[in-house]
Structure formats: C-alpha cells, structure tokens
Amino acid sequence: MLWRIGRFHFDFPRPPVVMGILNVTPDSFSDGGLFSDPERAVDRAWAILEEGAEMIDIGGESTRPGSKPIAPAEELRRILPVLERLVPRFPIPISVDTCKPEVAEAAIHSGASLINDIGAVMQVPRMWKAIADARVGYLVMHMQGTPQTMQLAPSYLEVVGEVGAFFADCLSRLEKSGVHPDQVALDPGIGFGKTVEQNLQLLTHLNVYSPLRRPLVIGVSRKSFLGEVAGGGPSYRLPAALACSLRAADQGCAIFRTHDVRETSQALWTWSALRQSALSQSTVSQLG
Image 1 (cartoon, rainbow, N blue to C red):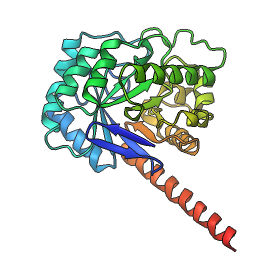
Image 2 (image 1 turned 60 degrees about the vertical axis):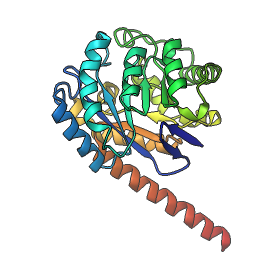
Image 3 (image 1 turned 30 degrees about the horizontal axis):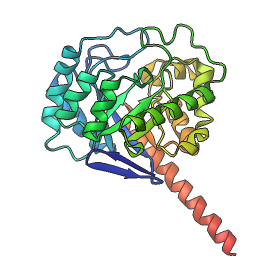
Image 4 (image 1 turned 60 degrees about the horizontal axis):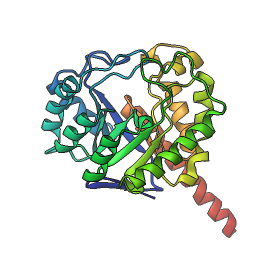
C-alpha cells in the first residue's frame, strides 16, 4: 500500500510513522504561543526531526473545542515564514494543517508536501482541485460539526460504521475529482465531535477500515478525553496517549500524530520490535 506525498512516499506495511506536531498559534490547547515566533518554530522543527519524526505537521489555526476560525491571511502570516525557512533544507515531508483552500494553495506553492484537512467532511471543490493539480498528499479527517460546535452534543447511531461510510464516500468523490487514492490517508478524528466512549470505540475497531486499503492516521496527543479516562491536564496525559497509540498500532494504524515525538517514537519502535520478534518466533515454531 503506497502513500505518495509530493516527492516523498511511504510503502506500507512498514514500521509506524510518527508525525510531529508544530503549532505556530497563540491559542492551541496545550502549547499555544510556545512556537509563534518563526525562529523558535524552526528550532522546534529540527528538534522534532532529531526526536524521530518522519513527518511534521504545521498548524496555524487552533482547532481545540470551542475555537473560532481566523482569516486566511492571518493563518498564512503564521505559517509561511516557517515554511520558507524549512522547505529548502528539511529532509522529511512537511504537512500543513488547514481546512482553507486558499491557505492550502499557498502552502503547496511554498513547498508543503501534504495537506491535513480537518474540514474534509465539507468536501470543498477548490481544496480537492488544489490537491489533484499539485499531486500532493491529502489527509482526510472525519469531524462532526465544526471546532466551535463539535463537542456540544456529538450524536451517532454507530460511530465506527458512520466514520467508515464517510471514508468510503470521500475516497470515491476524491477519485472522481482527480485525486488518486495513493495520495490519500484517513484519520477518524479522535476528539473531533465524539464522546469519550465513541473515541474508545474507534480506537478499538480501527481494523474495520483495513478494506479501504489506505493508511490510517490517529492523533490522540494530550486530548481531553484522555483526562476524562485517566485524569490529569494536557501535560500529564502522555502515558494515556501512549496506551491508545499502541492499541491503535495493534489495530493496523500506520501514522501517529503527536506533540511528544521522542516518547511516542520509542514506544512504537519497541512495539514494532516486539511484533517482529513474535512473528519470527511463530515462523520458527511452524517450521519445528
């Protein structure tokens, strides 16, 4: 299963991919303001690379529950200086987290290889055309509502099936719009219009989406549902996030979006080594 991201590609199955989060916002829920200065953001990007990330995701607009949208010009003011400094030298794919087609177009022109679209459910033709024309990667995320409304009263008849139906419909529509399936990865949108129980159901049934033959991405890092399950504020939720990530890896998840790159990388490298050892032992036992 191939995922093409501009000039980069990932061929699955392979060890899990860690995508490091770089928020260049003043108001993100766990690290708002830390990297709003472009030079500090660039320094953090290089640190993310050293910590084991194979992709980086730059966000210029907070999408925490209740957040209000900002103008495209402001979002671009935040992300373009970082892209301009990173693109000429950065050796791994750079993703931009945006649901605005004008921001995506400018980011792609500046060298972004992937657009992470939390608003894919809106199926914006201009966004899809930009992805098709540039042949960059596209991360399709499921969200019920908008960041302002998504956590007010999430409601599903059956969340796992409904997210799967969204993925299948979106893949079909994207292909008709000129976006090749190899460009697309899928994110069930943990914490985006879901209750705690619905998040847990998704995390324990990710293998349901295997027949779609596209890489799965999850982002659980520091999210509020972890605090409701295990307690603690954003900076104390790493163990809970790692538990969810390892469960997702068991379910076939391929890409893990996180603030805590070093710790997540170590956990997934160890998981991968254990899995490989178990497979090798199984082969030896069968031969015996």
